Every structure is written in C-alpha cells, then in structure tokens.
Length: 164
Image (cartoon, rainbow, N blue to C red; front, side):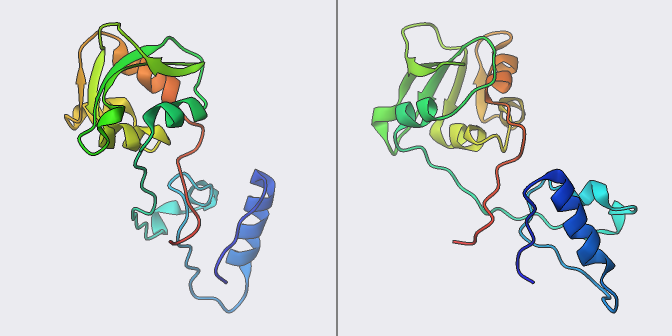
C-alpha cells in the first residue's frame, strides 16, 4: 500500500487499526506522514516507532504582499516586520501583519528577518520564537515574538503528501 489517508480523526484511527492488525505482517512502514500525525499517539508503545524526519515542502515567497494577504491568521495584535529580500528586492521593506492581512507600513519595525525565515514561518512549520533562538529573526520590540507566533499559529503542521 502506498497511501492511507482518513478524512476524519475516527476514520484515520480505524484505518490504522485495520492496517496494523492485519495477520502475517511483521512490519508496517508508514512514510511521508506529517510530523503531527495521529499515528504516534494512537500506538500503545509509540517509542517502538523508528521515527525519521525529512524535509519535503519548501516555500519561497516571490510576492510577499499577495502571499501574506492570501493566508489566514489567528486573532491577535498586529506585528510590524522589517523584511530583507536580496533575491526579490520588491518584497523588502516594512510590513504590518495582522488578523486582516498585511500591508506596507511606516511604523517602526518590531522584528527583522529575511525572506527565507518568513518562508519557514509562513505555513506554520516553525515559530518566530524558534527562528529567533536560531538567530534568524532579530527582535526589536518586547512582545513582538509572541504576537507574531499568535498570528501565524496553525492547528496542524504543514504537510505535502506528494513527492515532487
């Protein structure tokens, strides 16, 4: 079997219960699952999993304004970001991002980062706090990291089930 995808938590649970319960199977290999897949918590002994993480989804924002306005945000206070982008210089500048979207701003920036860091946070794969600890985001104002993380928070990790 190549793929096993349920359309609800109950369907996912029952699908994996069936696959793991098939007689005469020594091993079940589950590849290309998202980091937050339910399988890990469904197992009685999840530490028996051989967990292997690989990258499979990359984001390069070419039109930051369109991308930031196409995305949904959680409720919260806006954050002002100073964005650097050497590859697509039209993206560089000060951006205010809030629950209603993003626009260029004249306000003082609260975070400074480059387009690759923004791409890492865009789909929710990494938080701004994680990026700041890796020195990929510079904090210019108290509370800005928390506000950015609140706005960009997602309910699931990003995942692409296809290999391309």
